[in-house]
Length: 332
Length: 141
Image 1 (cartoon, one colour):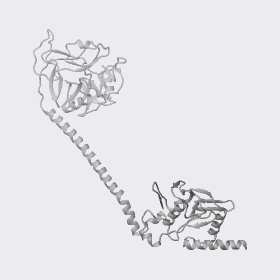
Image 2 (tube, one colour; image 1 turned 90 degrees about the vertical axis):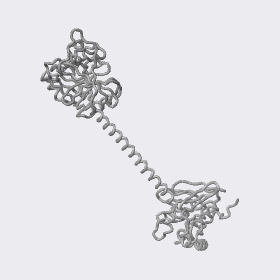
Image 3 (tube, each protein chain N blue to C red; image 1 turned 60 degrees about the horizontal axis):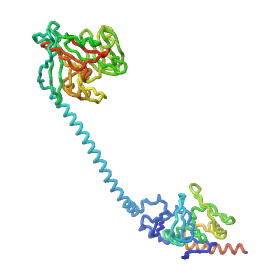
Image 4 (spheres, helix red, strand yellow; image 1 turned 90 degrees about the horizontal axis):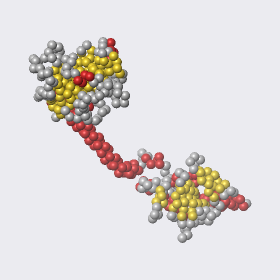
């Protein structure tokens, strides 16, 4: 088909515009020829503004809905966070309530040691050296989970190293204290016995210092009690921290096992054993609910332990391990 | 300006259209952005479309010969002897096209002698013819 506007190759022609000047004000917005884009929003052309406003009407409606969607989402997330926080606070309060209830206690008896049955004496205080030492056992349930409290009476603690003490029937209470490293058989972290530093290390923040018969349990990477124990022929060992200042301390170990702890509360020092497997954090929460002010971990699971009841019964727990550096906190 | 066929639509601002080349039943529009669009229409149809979009007396577009439409706003260089026409904004684009010597000579003459082509395209076309005619007479004289 031939180009009806064709001209000779040697000719030129201006392409005449056909749009009338007066038609400018009703021009559809998409056919704005020969106008700079900056001229589109002149004050004296309200219809152009209206057209442009209409053009933006559709996307602004979408923006409106999107904005409200984002706001609703934020409000929902905040509500979820508040709900979770409220549940946790409520749970802690319930645990505190359970701890405030009086314990139901029972005495656990084992095989009596031959020739050493003694009638129970009058109740003795922990610090009464004239009365024979014994371990009071109290079972309790906190937040549905069973715990055993081993409270030594009329006995003084110290640290012992080696297997011999496991056969000592005069022991009032014996619990494995610091971990023994599996790679080299040495005691894990700082350990001082009778003023002699056997190992070093402060990777575990919890500590127990026994100086002149006085027990201090705390959570501190650097404790001056270490030097004091050395100077004053005392004992010192480190373990995982559980409770500090009445608040649970989080640990990164998340496996479940039977747990044990050395606890201080109201001036008393005693041991707590879990009756079921749990993580360290769960155990720490229970100890907090129990009212522990300070607590550190003691070797748990099937670690060897023993105690003597008020009637002289010697009770042994766990398995014997033939480790050269196995160590215990022992009440005599 | 909108160039629309059954299969496609190309929308360009007037100042963004630098020149259009005709090639049979197709035309290629070259833009100030450096891109080009092949339109399924003859150059005459493109010319019609441009005329529809331009206001009276406000069109900078020239048809040059059979196969060229140029936007005079972007004329940068005309050399009739070498048949060279350069369209550029001196910044972002530069196109060099070829046209007949006579057409380029007339274009050059027009640009030099007709001050305000925009005012009235129709009158300008008449003036073009008149000026060209006078010019040729003067040349021959």
